[in-house]
Length: 167
Image: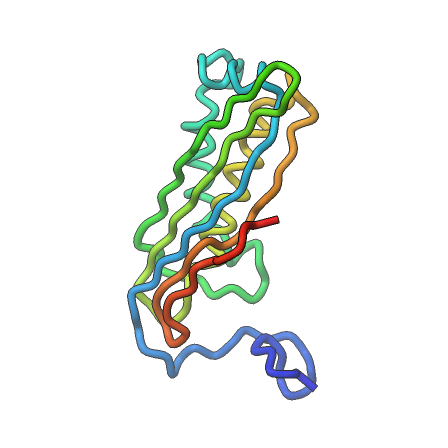
């Protein structure tokens, strides 16, 4: 009935996976996501001309806070002792008739019995949402895409590295 899915019990009902038998290992996950916007919006972000403040600094803090709140947002996630969260940005300017973008890269680390993939993906998502929130007054058309896991290491399954581009 559960088809090997670990978040369901024998009756097919949702459950938090029991990780009590797993060994503590160093775990790391890297996720990415892209925020698309008008070139003028990106220019104003880079020049510090957004009324709400330094967009990328606030998005960085929001991403860290988002990672720490992951089990409050995703019902079956274990609360983790996260040892590190880092948010970085890559800027992709564009011509006047093209779309500009900011890539958000989030890295989360822990030593524990379960991985930090969800924390890294949540960190990226919250940072992206924060960019939208801070810039929506001048660009309501901001959108998001290519959110996903790039790499994870640690645990029984070892290393995973995405081999195909995120659609």
